[in-house]
Image (cartoon, rainbow, N blue to C red):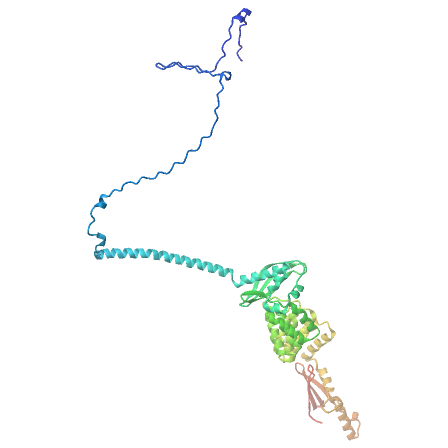
Length: 497
């Protein structure tokens, strides 16, 4: 609890007599002076009212001090040095003749010189090694950055990017010199895709000293998938081998069977890009149409090799058609049946072969086996062909082949021999035998029925399509004939008249 202060109340007379007290001061009084010190005077603050105004004099900025003049040093009198004033010796040690060095001194000197020489030699060698290593690394890096594959990829990317950005002028300049000579810039622009598209995944599939083949992924509204390009090296730069402007004239010439014009345009395309399988396929078809069998075989084989190595616009059905041309040349033009069978084997190995193509190819191979007298291989081909043929004529042909080669064509062989005509005679063999019997009966003055002729026609299967037909009267052979039911050849042997 706070303490309560008690204050005495003064009377009126005490109030008058009481003097005002000095205010309390919190300042500690000054201590008394020490013995021997003068008395201390108490300082008092002068109020502002008692202060006298000070007179202000005009203030002036003092002038800067003047720069002192440089002092010229006084010339001191020169004093002669005692050693300079001394008399110079008449002999100079540096002019005296050097004494010859001893062997020890020479050995030490040589070691010192050798050591001094070795040090800069080692540092120079190290510097040369560092320079060689850095130069080799730089050369290796430069070589890696300037390899043909990197240059080819860069050229292909720049060409495709120019086409993508519709910068057809820059893309045209990326063509080979022969391509630009064969195609104008305006025509090149007309052939390009006008829609938006993009590309990715450039990959080199083949690279030689002069030719490069590169694939890429195409993404567009009209077509997407894998595409490809051929490049040729010109003056150290990879250029696009472009020939698409010749495709339409070639196909139009082939459609109207103008093989001479087709061959002309195809040769021009081959000069621009001889490695494209499609170009070689045009050459093959044009040469076949012109009857140039050897040339057709050469370019067709080149087409097959290129198609196995490079991507192309050739579809499987196009390659199948070229093999059929080659097989026809081997079988029907050159008579090389074994090569024809090889082509048929390749054709039948094509995946997703339609029924009609399989039927025709099986029948053609069966015929080739039959001509080669390989009857054991021909019969299964005829049987298999009959399963795929949808045309009634083809079905009948396959069934007949199986029947003849299986030895079931004897009756047909007999009828074929009966209808055969001998050279220089308008009568058939059957009519000729009837006329012989009539002439004999007339000579004997008897009826034909009374003579009791007993002629019989029998057939025997020799091999493949060949049958032997024999005509006998009782047990006497009159004539015989070898009948080939497939090539329709007949050979007749007459024994008696």
